[in-house]
Each structure stands twice: as structure tokens, then as C-alpha cells.
Image (cartoon, rainbow, N blue to C red; front, side, top):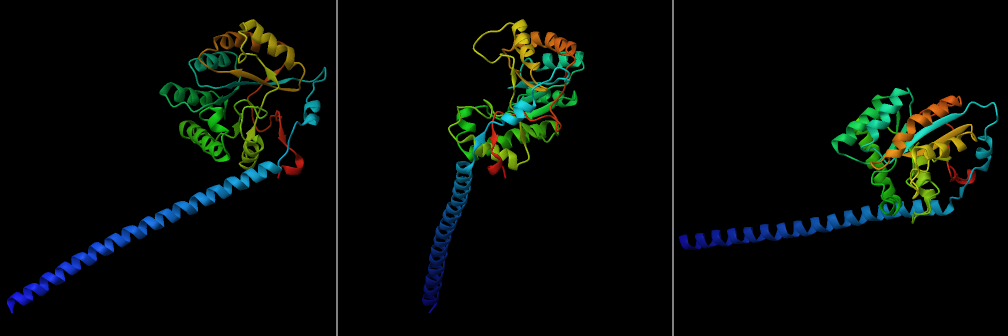
Length: 290
């Protein structure tokens, strides 16, 4: 009798363990199926979002706003507004640039990239604390990555936006496309990136005056000044393209003379703000702007 009871208990225990193992396997299998289905649904949603963005881009038309360009041409008695902008920083030259601007009590605009070393983060903080405008120039500055897709652009944008906010407390609202809005390097239609910025309430700025410090020709500091001065007199509003990088020592040397010549012309040297006239190489046509 005892043997029979023990045998029944053993069988019951064995069956219970087997059932538990079976249920565990089934639960694991079902969880894997749920995870797979969730991943599939998420991917489908993202693909649908990308397709929608691409379809929107296909319908967008990029145009040069000739009317705005003509309206910006300076008359003899106009007070010139000049916006000095520095791309690609922070760099080893940032503090030198900031020191010069401080010496002349001039404010400028810095379109920065995603650099996270201590010196770069401190430079970003100083840009803001010194009263300059800080803008976004992408996180990676790698054209092949930034412009590879709509989603890649959004990811890069979020990274530089968050970096600036986390470092300085500033919600950056101005953007400069690497290569400008009219660049021919992007493999994807630029209109979808422009629409994304427009829909996000971000203003993008190109330039209408170049110093030449990013060209293959090695201009001297005096030549950089000449390049700027010959063009700023053409416009009521000039957005000047310069660069803040480790190898831009001639730009640093040119800055004091450039400021002095602009001031001698009676030009107002200002940081980009909401009141700044938009200087954009291309925009979405009015029919597709909304």
C-alpha cells in the first residue's frame, strides 16, 4: 500500500514538473512571437513614416526666392546689418575668437557640431554666457550619414539639439545645413529635411557673403577681409560664412581688421535672432510650404 502511494506521488510530481516545463516552453515561445510581432509593427510604422516623408518630399519644390534677394540689395543710404557666423566649432580657436569679439564688444553666431570633450563643452557654455547666438550645424557633420535618410537626419538633429540644451540650457532654434540648403552632396531630396525643420519651428540660415576660409585656396588674413568687404556693401543684410576649426588661424588673424573695417563703414554687427532677415539659398515653394 505504501509503495503504491509513493509511486502515485512520484508520478504526480513527475507529471507536475513536466507540465511546468511544457508551460514554460510555451510561454517563452509565445513571448518570442509577441516580441517579433511588436518589432514588425514598429518597423512597419517607421517604414510608413519614411514613405510618407518621401512622398511629401516628392511633391515639394525647392525654389530660389529671387524676390527676397532683390529686396535685400542695399541702397546707398542703407545701414548695413552684418551677421558674422562661425561653422564647425568648437575648436582650439574658439576662445581666441571669443576674446577678439569681447575686445570689440561684438556679438556673433556659432553653428556648432557634436563635440563632447571638456574643452568643447566649456566653449559652448562660454559662447552662450558671452551673449552670442549658438546654433546647430549637425551632430556628426558627416554628409553621408546626415543626409542618408529622413530618419537619419532627424536622429542627428535630435542629438545636436539635446547636446546644446544639456550643455548650455539653451533651446537652439537656428540651424545651418552642412554644405548649405542647396548642397549637391546629399543623396536624398533636401526638401524633406527643410520641411522637417519648418514643421519643427526651426529657422535655417545659409549665407550670402563668404570669407573664403573653407576653399582650397590658402587666403591670407588680409585677403579674407577683402573677400568679405567687397560683398557686404551689396546687401542690407549680410550673413558672413566663416569657420571655427583648428586650422583656421588666418580667420582668427583676420577678425580684428574685419570688425574695424565693418565698423568704419557704419555697419551694425549683430548675432542672429528672430528679427534677422532669413538668408536661404533655397526654400520650399509657397504652394508646398504648408
